[in-house]
Length: 364
Image 1 (cartoon, rainbow, N blue to C red):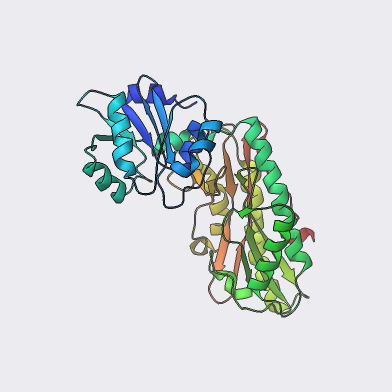
Image 2 (cartoon, rainbow, N blue to C red):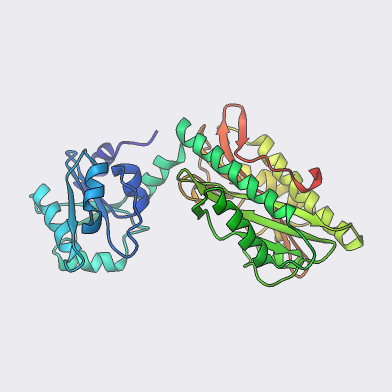
């Protein structure tokens, strides 16, 4: 269990914490928004005094949603950094402040703007504390993740149902996203990926005008945002009747599927992220494709599609109950084929429980 923010400030000898990412403000202050280019901020000091800072056009909405602290705002013609600095100085009168910030979000523009506002007492990094806080999901959060996974399954099935000779990758993406929007999806976890044949040899290739031909593989990597939580699934489908070339690629698929299933079956509490990565990687290496597995085995998932932890070699993080992550081995052979199979799930006392159960290509 991660420390509370007040305990973390005390342990790390910080007088306060300034959060500026919308994700942190949503999780800690209970206020969800997309400020676009405007700044939002949440500040808390070591005594527990706190405030929320938003654009003026959101002030009434923020005050309705956040009752536990003062809400301050700024109009577009005002300097928000001066106003934030003023409120911090009002809370903390001492001259030797040390304010923790999110290193992975607090950019150079913020740094110089606060400097000009006579606030430059920056201290420790909050990013890792936030990552650890988000790693273990609650029962409620798991419910959202399972629900998001079910919608993603519908998207996979839609694409499979609309595979016809001559359709382009981008056409399928557009059709599938429109169908999901009609189901109520407002946002996708990331840019939907649909790739045909050798085009899938680029792990994060961009869907284009490539037309689907008979007797080739289709890679689908997709996810939706549902109830505030992301889903992420990758499936393969073969279109047509298998020929000699496609049978060779079937062997590649079988290796990836075996690595995927083995990692899912053997994932358990107490092993390290590195050990789990190696379970899948060793299968692919033994099959002669080690150099073609060019990415980590998995990533965390929750409010965003990519979170902590990273399931990768060299990461000695011990996996715990409630951690949610992907298992997605892949093999990528230039000018031939790209194969990836992915499910996200939660680690439980009984092992890895997947958020998705869409059929694999061999089950169709």
